Image (spheres, rainbow, N blue to C red):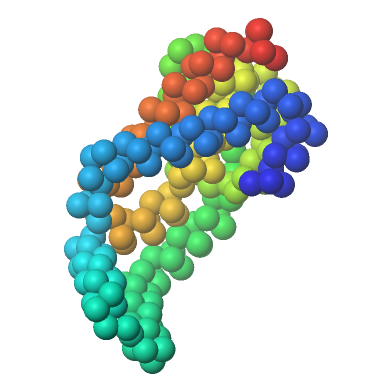
Length: 209
C-alpha cells in the first residue's frame, strides 16, 4: 500500500519501511508458491470448485464457438448471484466484527509481557495479532506506539503484519469459499512466515536500527 509506505517512511525511517515491504512481498510470493505446490485448490468449497470447472469448460467452448454478449452477461450474472446468496450473511457478520475489533490493540499488555525480546514473544505476538483487525494505514501509528513502548522491532513487525494479513472477520468470510484444510494451511503459513521474520529482525535490530 503506497500510503502505508509513505507513512512508514516518515514515522519510522527508510530501513523499517524497506524491511516491511520486502517481508510482505516475500511472504506473499512464498505463500503462493507453496499453495500451488500443494495443489491447494482441491480444498476450495465444492460449489466453487464446480464453478471453476464450469468456467474452464466455458473457456474451452468459447474457443470453438464464440459466445455472444448476452450469453456472457447471463453467465456472469448467474455466477455473481450464486456466490452472493452463499456468502452475504457472513460478509455482514465479518464486517460487523471488523468494526468492533478495528484498531483494538492491548499496547500496555504487549509492552509488559513481550517487551523483553524473549524467543517466544514473536509467535505469541503473531497469534494475538491474527484474530485482531486493522488496515494497512491504520497499523502504522500502532507500530510507532509499540516501538516507543519498548517492543523490539521484529516483534512489532510480526504483530502488525499479522493484524493486516488475517483477522477473525476475514476467516469467517474465507470459510465460505475455503474448506478447513485450506484455511488452516493459510493461517499456518502466515504464523510461520511472520514468526521467522520477527526472529530475523529482532536479531538484526542492533545493526540495522
